[in-house]
Length: 516
Image 1 (cartoon, rainbow, N blue to C red):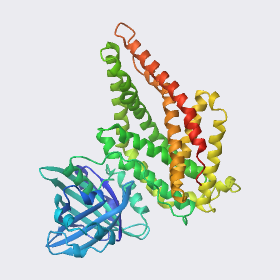
Image 2: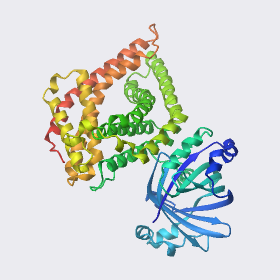
Image 3: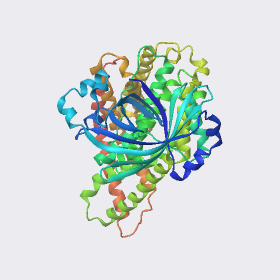
Image 4: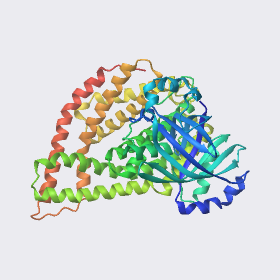
């Protein structure tokens, strides 16, 4: 199927008139704006079989004609959606299976029972204002402003969004145009398609928190291409959890966004061995800002929802414990609100658009790190698999050095070990697809994950102490001071237990041969 590439952005309904009058948009237009009313019906089975396979099947009425559209696969990150798409005219508002040519889709819907179960799940109806833009690089894009509604049964939600669909050229001007429009219009990245929003309405639930997916790397890739693939993967991980995090219903969404950000920062660290650190510095600084918004919220989530929640049932009638929990919960909500405001800010939108544009320009290629030219792990001309193997071997040796003095490591040294283990785990996950021994790769990564979890639990004692110092604890008969002491004692005892587990986990890691 052909690939559709489009940048999707949300905007408030009140800003649509100002957008259509925007001078830049007018200067790029090479056609008059055309308005059409589009009515679409999305089909699936009662158990959403197509959705589970990443497919959207749509029948859209355009004038008197019906068009069947099938979308599937692809990705969405930084507002840029890349999907496989096929379209064909049909006679009625019913799926026409003779118009489907993709072999995988044909196989999926080959059973008569599945075809019989297909029924309308939700509809969209909106006005689309369309014009063609000539981009600065000579390429063209279709600009669409959509306003309307998604309807599933008795429930509906509004649509007000821009789609910049690339017709020819590079995606770079799409990001640049969005950045320019952002100066005048309060835009937000839209990483969720109309189909996904419709499914949320129809099912009553959104996507669960999503963990990182394997990076699709090919042996013939250059080091730069591998870096781009890893970065897009990290951004996809970040943005796939964004809607759930803003909803605030599950702390795991924020956790996964923070993991995605850590993976991205780790990727910058890895590839700064090849390309100039100067080329990565502006993005690294921006990501550090975002990490600073996520960190306190995640620390308080873990403290209240995990650490405090584990201790509290043993002291249900302790007056100080009840009072302290209330104060900690208020601080947790405050820091979560701060993290959500950061994601909803113009700064965040601008950062993601800049990052998308930066990936398109590949400006780091013009700034190689000459100091790294004599280091095989720091040369961009080596095969990417060789680069990966050299890097993994170097970090593996770093880890082994800690093992020689594991029993005597201080708290700061244990924290440093945790950071090295975490970076090695991310690198191993990034490059795992290059190496054929899947089982040994899986065991190695799992042993690193276990080490990371144990060391993280040991570090929580210092985190608990820091967080409790932020609470205004009453030192009178309320018992809050005693409650804080109980929490500290529980955390310290858990750290001792984890320290005993560390030796066994290290021996297990040591037994795993490198897979590269």
